[in-house]
Image (cartoon, rainbow, N blue to C red; front, top):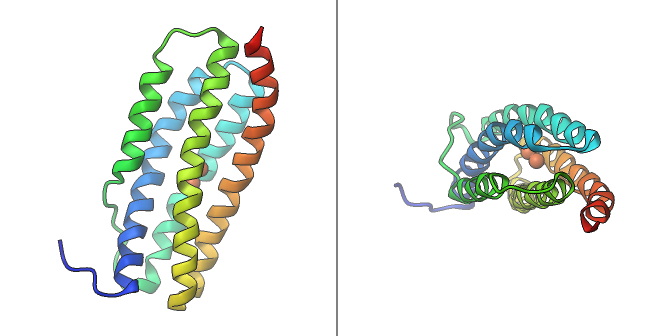
Length: 163
Ligand code: FE
Ligand code: FE
Protein backbone atom coordinates (compact mmCIF):
# COMPACT_ATOMS: atom_id res chain seq x y z
CA UNK A 1 0.00 0.00 0.00
CA UNK A 2 1.45 3.36 -0.98
CA UNK A 3 1.71 6.17 1.53
CA UNK A 4 -1.18 8.62 1.73
CA UNK A 5 0.55 12.00 1.62
CA UNK A 6 -2.15 14.50 0.77
CA UNK A 7 -5.89 15.08 1.16
CA UNK A 8 -6.18 14.13 -2.52
CA UNK A 9 -4.69 10.70 -1.64
CA UNK A 10 -7.17 10.31 1.22
CA UNK A 11 -10.03 11.30 -1.10
CA UNK A 12 -8.99 8.75 -3.71
CA UNK A 13 -8.68 6.05 -1.01
CA UNK A 14 -12.15 6.84 0.39
CA UNK A 15 -13.65 6.94 -3.10
CA UNK A 16 -12.40 3.39 -3.66
CA UNK A 17 -14.11 2.41 -0.41
CA UNK A 18 -17.54 3.81 -1.35
CA UNK A 19 -17.18 2.36 -4.86
CA UNK A 20 -16.86 -1.07 -3.25
CA UNK A 21 -19.62 -0.35 -0.70
CA UNK A 22 -22.14 0.62 -3.40
CA UNK A 23 -21.32 -2.52 -5.39
CA UNK A 24 -21.87 -4.66 -2.29
CA UNK A 25 -25.21 -2.94 -1.61
CA UNK A 26 -26.35 -3.65 -5.18
CA UNK A 27 -25.76 -7.34 -4.40
CA UNK A 28 -27.52 -7.48 -1.02
CA UNK A 29 -30.60 -5.38 -1.90
CA UNK A 30 -32.20 -8.11 -4.07
CA UNK A 31 -32.01 -10.45 -1.05
CA UNK A 32 -33.65 -7.81 1.14
CA UNK A 33 -36.38 -7.21 -1.46
CA UNK A 34 -37.16 -10.94 -1.45
CA UNK A 35 -37.49 -10.84 2.35
CA UNK A 36 -39.80 -7.80 2.45
CA UNK A 37 -43.43 -8.61 3.18
CA UNK A 38 -45.10 -5.22 2.81
CA UNK A 39 -45.61 -4.00 -0.74
CA UNK A 40 -44.52 -0.49 0.19
CA UNK A 41 -41.25 -1.70 1.69
CA UNK A 42 -40.56 -3.94 -1.27
CA UNK A 43 -41.27 -1.01 -3.61
CA UNK A 44 -38.99 1.35 -1.67
CA UNK A 45 -36.12 -1.16 -1.70
CA UNK A 46 -36.63 -1.94 -5.39
CA UNK A 47 -36.50 1.77 -6.25
CA UNK A 48 -33.36 2.11 -4.16
CA UNK A 49 -31.73 -0.81 -5.97
CA UNK A 50 -32.20 1.10 -9.23
CA UNK A 51 -30.75 4.23 -7.59
CA UNK A 52 -27.82 2.21 -6.26
CA UNK A 53 -26.85 1.14 -9.79
CA UNK A 54 -26.78 4.83 -10.69
CA UNK A 55 -24.70 5.54 -7.56
CA UNK A 56 -22.06 3.08 -8.74
CA UNK A 57 -21.88 4.94 -12.07
CA UNK A 58 -21.69 8.36 -10.42
CA UNK A 59 -18.86 7.21 -8.15
CA UNK A 60 -17.01 5.83 -11.19
CA UNK A 61 -17.31 9.28 -12.82
CA UNK A 62 -16.15 10.99 -9.63
CA UNK A 63 -12.72 9.36 -10.11
CA UNK A 64 -12.07 11.53 -13.20
CA UNK A 65 -10.79 14.59 -11.34
CA UNK A 66 -8.37 12.46 -9.31
CA UNK A 67 -6.59 11.58 -12.56
CA UNK A 68 -6.77 7.90 -11.63
CA UNK A 69 -9.00 5.17 -13.01
CA UNK A 70 -12.06 3.93 -11.13
CA UNK A 71 -11.10 1.06 -8.87
CA UNK A 72 -12.78 -0.50 -5.83
CA UNK A 73 -11.03 -1.36 -2.58
CA UNK A 74 -13.06 -3.79 -0.49
CA UNK A 75 -15.12 -1.88 2.05
CA UNK A 76 -14.79 -4.08 5.14
CA UNK A 77 -17.46 -2.10 6.98
CA UNK A 78 -20.07 -2.86 4.30
CA UNK A 79 -18.91 -6.49 4.17
CA UNK A 80 -19.61 -6.65 7.92
CA UNK A 81 -22.97 -4.88 7.62
CA UNK A 82 -24.14 -7.14 4.79
CA UNK A 83 -22.91 -10.30 6.54
CA UNK A 84 -24.79 -9.32 9.68
CA UNK A 85 -27.87 -8.42 7.62
CA UNK A 86 -27.85 -11.83 5.94
CA UNK A 87 -27.55 -13.60 9.31
CA UNK A 88 -30.36 -11.51 10.77
CA UNK A 89 -32.61 -12.09 7.76
CA UNK A 90 -32.02 -15.85 7.99
CA UNK A 91 -33.77 -15.94 11.38
CA UNK A 92 -37.34 -17.19 11.46
CA UNK A 93 -39.59 -14.19 12.09
CA UNK A 94 -43.21 -13.19 11.87
CA UNK A 95 -43.87 -11.19 8.66
CA UNK A 96 -44.41 -7.84 10.42
CA UNK A 97 -41.41 -8.37 12.70
CA UNK A 98 -39.26 -9.31 9.70
CA UNK A 99 -40.20 -6.01 8.02
CA UNK A 100 -39.41 -3.97 11.13
CA UNK A 101 -36.00 -5.67 11.33
CA UNK A 102 -35.38 -5.24 7.60
CA UNK A 103 -35.96 -1.48 7.82
CA UNK A 104 -33.44 -1.25 10.66
CA UNK A 105 -30.86 -3.16 8.62
CA UNK A 106 -31.42 -0.98 5.56
CA UNK A 107 -31.04 2.18 7.64
CA UNK A 108 -27.67 1.03 9.00
CA UNK A 109 -26.48 0.77 5.41
CA UNK A 110 -27.90 4.20 4.52
CA UNK A 111 -26.24 5.82 7.53
CA UNK A 112 -22.87 4.35 6.57
CA UNK A 113 -23.30 5.78 3.07
CA UNK A 114 -24.40 9.18 4.36
CA UNK A 115 -21.37 9.39 6.67
CA UNK A 116 -18.98 8.49 3.86
CA UNK A 117 -20.56 10.83 1.31
CA UNK A 118 -20.48 13.62 3.89
CA UNK A 119 -16.71 13.23 4.24
CA UNK A 120 -16.18 12.85 0.50
CA UNK A 121 -18.23 15.96 -0.35
CA UNK A 122 -16.32 18.07 2.16
CA UNK A 123 -12.98 16.84 0.82
CA UNK A 124 -14.05 17.26 -2.83
CA UNK A 125 -15.02 20.84 -2.01
CA UNK A 126 -11.66 21.54 -0.39
CA UNK A 127 -9.80 19.94 -3.28
CA UNK A 128 -11.72 21.92 -5.90
CA UNK A 129 -13.16 18.74 -7.42
CA UNK A 130 -16.39 20.48 -8.47
CA UNK A 131 -17.71 17.71 -10.67
CA UNK A 132 -17.04 15.00 -8.08
CA UNK A 133 -18.67 17.11 -5.38
CA UNK A 134 -21.83 17.42 -7.51
CA UNK A 135 -22.01 13.71 -8.26
CA UNK A 136 -21.32 12.60 -4.69
CA UNK A 137 -23.76 15.21 -3.39
CA UNK A 138 -26.50 13.74 -5.60
CA UNK A 139 -25.80 10.30 -4.15
CA UNK A 140 -25.90 11.70 -0.62
CA UNK A 141 -29.27 13.36 -1.33
CA UNK A 142 -30.69 10.04 -2.52
CA UNK A 143 -29.43 8.26 0.61
CA UNK A 144 -30.91 10.91 2.90
CA UNK A 145 -34.28 10.72 1.13
CA UNK A 146 -34.47 6.93 1.32
CA UNK A 147 -33.44 7.05 4.99
CA UNK A 148 -36.40 9.36 5.70
CA UNK A 149 -38.74 7.18 3.65
CA UNK A 150 -37.61 4.13 5.66
CA UNK A 151 -38.24 6.02 8.91
CA UNK A 152 -41.78 6.76 7.72
CA UNK A 153 -42.37 3.14 6.72
CA UNK A 154 -41.02 1.94 10.06
CA UNK A 155 -43.81 3.69 11.97
CA UNK A 156 -46.38 1.40 10.42
CA UNK A 157 -44.13 -1.65 10.41
CA UNK A 158 -43.19 -1.28 14.07
CA UNK A 159 -46.80 -0.82 15.08
CA UNK A 160 -47.83 -3.93 13.16
CA UNK A 161 -44.95 -5.89 14.70
CA UNK A 162 -46.06 -5.01 18.22
CA UNK A 163 -49.25 -7.04 17.89
FE1 FE B 1 -25.97 4.41 -2.53
FE1 FE C 1 -28.25 3.72 -0.26
